[in-house]
Length: 199
Image 1: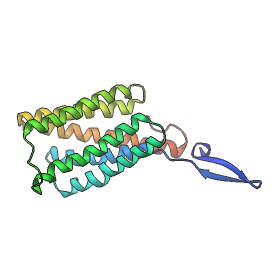
Image 2 (image 1 turned 120 degrees about the vertical axis):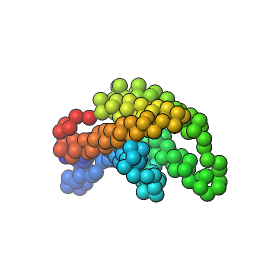
Image 3 (image 1 turned 30 degrees about the horizontal axis):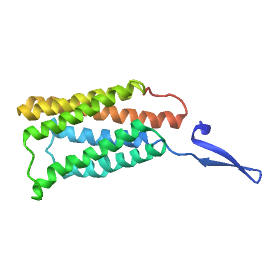
Image 4 (image 1 turned 180 degrees about the vertical axis):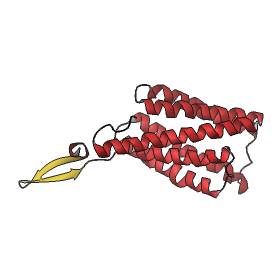
């Protein structure tokens, strides 16, 4: 509906439409989801970890989510500000973990430190899941399965069990597709001015 997307203003007797501020959540959700799917294609064994994933992590998964977080701050949305900004910087930290040792700027992390990294992100995501109970079913799915993904990656890393990493890969693909669905459903619902797809 036009009224939801535009504010009507009158200047010298002429009615004009002024575009109101856009919803940044779809940007953050799709950026997170698309990058997560591509990374977990690698975990699932479809292809190796390459510059394609690192570039996506920096340019889209990282930067786009940080921008969405800043926009949500301006909207007064504390949950989305924390979620998008945090996961945006997660992608930057993920790239730095891989690149810094290659550049001889830091020692490569061992399995225990990487497992701790995933556990802490899992704990953060699990707590954020509690907040989603008051928001939407779609976000509940995204955050609960994302928390599970981090814990699976932690267990797979510390044990060196390739089967667990494989399972995490397929579960991560589901996480990413879920986030993409919620983001794109919000765009479709806003465009049509009614609830076309459940979120």
